Amino acid sequence: MASPSVFYVFFVYICLFTSLCFADDPFVNYEFVVSYITASPLGVPQQVIAINGHFPGPTINVTTNNNVVVNVRNKLDEELLMTWAGIQQRRSSWQDGVLGTNCPIPPKWNWTYQFQVKDQIGSFFYFPSINFQRASGGFGGFIINNRDIIPIPFATPDGDIIILIGDWYTRNHTALRRALNGGKDLGMPDGVLINGKGPYRYNTTLVPDGIDYETIEVHPSKTYRIRVHNVGVSTSLNFRIQNHNLLLAETEGSYTVQQNYTSLDIHVGQSSSFLVTMDQNASTDYYIVASARFVNESLWQRVTGVAILRYSNSKGKASGPLPDAPNDQYDKTYSMNQARSIRWNVTASGARPNPQGSFRYGSINVTEVYVLKNMPPVTIDGKRRTTLSGISFVNPTTPIRLADQFKVKGVYKLDFPTKPITGPPRMATSIINGTYRGFMEVILQNNDTKMQSYHMNGYAFFVVGMDYGEWTENSRGTYNKWDGIARSTAQVFPGAWTAILISLDNVGVWNLRSENLDSWYLGQETYVRVVNPEATNKTELPIPDNALFCGALKKMQKPQDISSAPSIIGNRSKPFLSLVMMICAVIYIFN
Image (cartoon, rainbow, N blue to C red; front, top):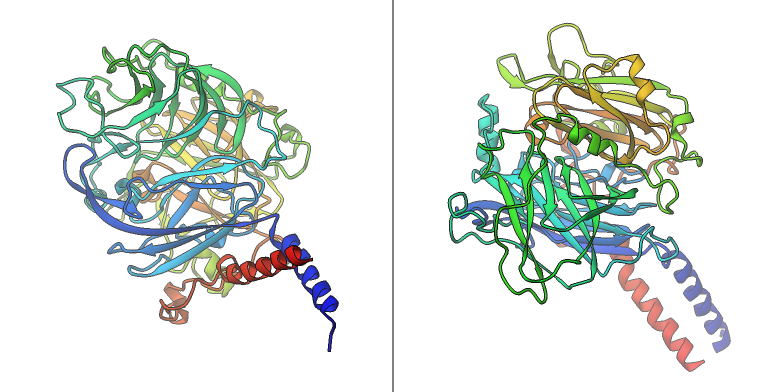
């Protein structure tokens, strides 16, 4: 029989093995119950999408390299997918939460997402990606904190505040969807929400009585990191705080050169974080404002979100007119110049979206060029559609990544044109064939009259240029080849272009789309398929055990066993880890 010392040594080895395997990259678990509730953000009762009974949903707060596990229970009456805007699921487009990679979660089902926020920091958000559901809510903030060993390029703030801004309709997402399907525009929004609440009654004519508004309490002389996300439908918003400077510090995972702004345009899908010092006297509260941009401002006056910044020693209510928005009447380039002024902090520590080590993206050879042109909506086969380069995307019934895995033919075509097609626009499931470890240049040309913003899942790209007019080969001479910001969502002004560079190092099938919900819903998207010719789990994780099946593969889907625990390493390992650590503690105490 083995001696006690042998058992002691055995358990010491177990303890050491456990700590080495699980200490560095811990699991962080969240439970999301997605359901309808009734709320009145603009004073009118309506159906909104809540998470765990709250609108907006809870903040996901994790640290670089954490393994994030989110179990989503779909209590809606329709299918659901959650996506994680700007989160680069390294090697795992299976967790991306869009129709090109995942089958939707059926009503009354749950599905567990698991991904690692590897080598990332910054401010992001999540939202439902299908059925126009984001217009009814289901969104929330997503913070990735740096590990302690990685310094941040500013003093640690005294607090962290999330502000979700977005245009809002009192019609729910199903009514808005019907309007689009019927060939109609959505029309002017009914207002702008700040953290799911309507405007403070700064004007008795424009704002009815009885609307609940957001109040953010702060302490004098303290500095806060304020993370602002535009989670709306299709309206660019100008964000400002009365009498306070906004020191821009980060956008969608990239530290910026720190510059003060009195206000900043934040376009649909974009996130920015500011350092704001509470250096004003507390004679009154102060307005926090998010107002519509690039519209008829007198007509859109009511589409303004107003919250209150309240010092802990405040003496009275905010009063007077709202702080002014930028006046573009005589300077049409104001907002574009502001966007150009946002530069990457190339000296800061932290994640970098360039695997080649130099971070000098301007000296990397471009391997492929795509010009994606947006035009006003068109009619194709009797339906009102939006297009990119003359193609209106049709979502396949079998997700692209799933079709690849099981070799289902005819689901899509790798024939997306490098330049806009010259013939009549068409509907197709046409995607881009990206070269693994290639360096892609994408020119986003907006020939519509509306502001657009574009997002690519799975990546941060370098925004290297933007200007009015048509992009030409000569436009490359204006590119910023040193410190263009790296982010996941870029704005494209009406009648203008934006150029981005993408290092295709993340294997998978990744959605490239308009973030404006109406443009996205009507077909303005495609996918970039990045395949490593050498099959290996080192560049892409295998299909998860809990993968859903639909379309041509729907017969593979087994009924959900609601009694079984989610098939994830994080939850399965918890009881074992707890037992082992208890034994380790006992051994330590008695020896």
